[in-house]
Amino acid sequence: MANNDISIPKRGIERAKVLEELSQFAKEDPDYRKLKTWSLVYFLGDEHTDFLLKAYGQYLSANGLNPMAFKSLKLLENQVVRMTANLLHGGREAAGVMTSGGTESCLLAVKTYRDMGRAVKRIRRPEMVLPETAHVAWEKGAEYFGVKAVHAPLRKDLGVDVDAVRKLVNRNTVMILGSAPEYPHGIIDPIPELGIVAGDRKIPLHVDACLGGFLLPFMEKLGHDLPRWDFRVPGVTSISADAHKYAFSAKGASVILYRSVEILKHQFFVHENWPGGVFASPALLGTRPGGAYAAAWASIMALGEDGFLANTAGMMEAVKKLKEGIRAIPDLEIVGEPKTAIFSYRSSSKEVNIFAVADQMEQRGWHIDRLQRPDALHVMVTPLHLQVIEDYLIDLKTSVDHVRRHPELATKGGAAMYGMISHIPLRGMVKKTVLKMFADMYGPDAKMISPQDTTMEGEAPAEQPDLATRAATWYLKLREKFRR
Ligand SMILES: *Cc1c(COP(=O)(O)O)cnc(C)c1O
Image (cartoon, rainbow, N blue to C red; front, side):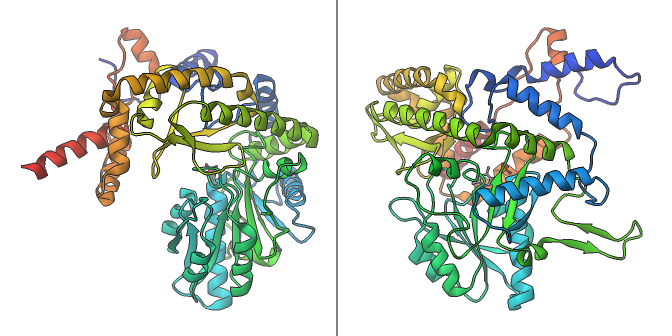
């Protein structure tokens, strides 16, 4: 048996050997280099990756915690923030910071507006109005910072229902959210209309452009017909944009921008009585990774406007081919009318279970993301995907045909599990179960067999059932119990 516990090795291992072992860990990871993933990774090729690595490496140890120490980082951060502000028409007044990612940017907006609501309007029980399609980072922010999330329903076109938003805001509303675009279906919320509500009620409006921040401006320049969504819309008070998504930077880089430093001020944290010294911090983290800022700066500089435009043109060509291909496959349909490089598709027929299609696609080596409400499959297109669109579509057609000929697949494997999980009415129970699974995953019995062990033993590690499998197993048991 492989050792299920590990302590620091008594003697350090030779660095070359460590690196070799390290690469073994990735053996079963999604193969993004072969463009098999449609989420999680924004891969522009090995040359760009090596370049990011060098940029990151130059500032690997630099710490952005104290802006007075590493002046280089403050300068890099300033420039990334300014370039983003100009891209999003924030003008000279716009002010912001770099963060470690979209989630940190979103969390900070929640904290900032909570504190601003308290300071300016004496709001004690803060609420925020979120579209149903808001990214989960906002739910996380609500939970972490004690701001009640009030959910606004969607219109038929899947944009948020602005009339509903108008009705949901009240004296305690500290912010309204719109997305450009939202993650699940790639739909851009009606920001100009939200801007009117926000302006009328004098409530801040944040636009979550974590995905769209470095994509939509270049689509606009290429002549795509898009609704306005950035600082040109009166009423928009802040925008988040992830460099580690469509600016193709290394992981750990996003930007949060406010219309003015007067709003940003509510984000800062100062503690003047710490024995470690007067402490001031502009964002959520303490130590801030200089490498990530340098890589973001380098990526934006190296791409340049022409690079962004070429990438965006490539992506949109891939999106067009992909959508046409999907529409040509009987029983599949695109969800809504997404205009960006992110969209989802579902089955339009009872005969084709979309989760069974996902299983078939995974058997063919694709890494597939599944959505719920409605059940659908997700794609986030990057420029290099253009090379594999045809393969993807051939496999998709084959998968759909196979599922249509084998309806029993809907009740097997992943399809059965994902189907059940998304349709179990007892959502509270789903949450409890997932919490328990996490406790198992991170608790003392967490799987710790490393790939080296298994190669030495010549045996594969026991399959650890994934979350979905375990939730479904639990659900089946529960159903049995209630039947009896
Ligand atoms: C990715 C994303 C986030 C969260 O960003 P992370 O970098 O994953 O933390 C927030 N909002 C939207 C719309 C996103 O797509």
